[in-house]
Image (cartoon, rainbow over all chains, first blue to last red; front, side, top):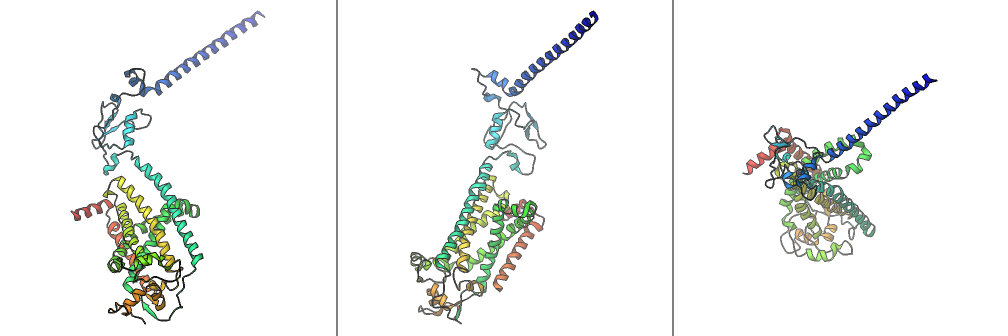
Length: 389
Length: 41
């Protein structure tokens, strides 16, 4: 019994000692963890807080080692956290967000420029915060604007077709035709049209492809398509530019304002009512299309070329170019959708003007009576060309 | 129809020429821009 009690006492003593040691170790460990954690969290602030009066933890201005001396340049002060880069520039040793240097990061977020050993001087700017605003604007505003604009345009055209049906030739076709557009004119039109259609489709695929095409084609299929699409978009842009230049050379004079424009506009081009206002070779609506293509298409072409040469401007310039390129292209697509509708499905006899170049005489008299008078010499002047067959 | 086909062919031809000039000659867009800038100056 005595032996058992003694053994029990020994075991209890050992057990108690172990428990006490474990508890002690745990407490000490916990204390270290707490102290270590607080020290770690407050590491970047302790020295600065000590230098502040009134217990504020805001770091003093002198604590900032990366204050810019003038706009666009970072000059390190203090030198504690910097090192020399390969190109001689100064770079921070620690660039992770753990480094508690709020003013340095604020400056970087404001877009100050440091130095870089890279070939592109733009790399010296670590963060361009405006890019986030641009990205959000493109992914939301432009995205929704384009979708509503194009869907709205298609809806209006459908409603217009339901209301007006296909605009017929008054009195039916005469069987006699006259040349509306010669070979060069049609060539210029189709050069511009074909390149614009491909540019429009590939551009829309860039803007809406992630939402519309990836679910259908898959990511790899979309990537393959866009690899070709991007190349086509880049280089067909030059064909579009040539087309615009050709059209300006050929049609500029005939698209200048004339006395028929205001009456044509007041009568809505005869699209909503019966009876057609007089017009020369191009009515006011066609002139609007022409100037849209020349001016808006010209800006789209300019911004597109600038995007192909990113060295031509700053990053903000590129973002602005991309934004206007997308917005104006969407507007242009909407305008051209209306143009395609009225030139094909919406009006009988209209497509032949750009198809064969020959239009029915009655169609010509109905829509371009002043032009017919000019061509046939009925206006009292010498015929301007384009003979009736 | 002929004018349409001619327009298509011309569009492709212009695109190919542009691709050859800008890409096929092995020039980066940066180099092309420098050349364009020197010509302008």
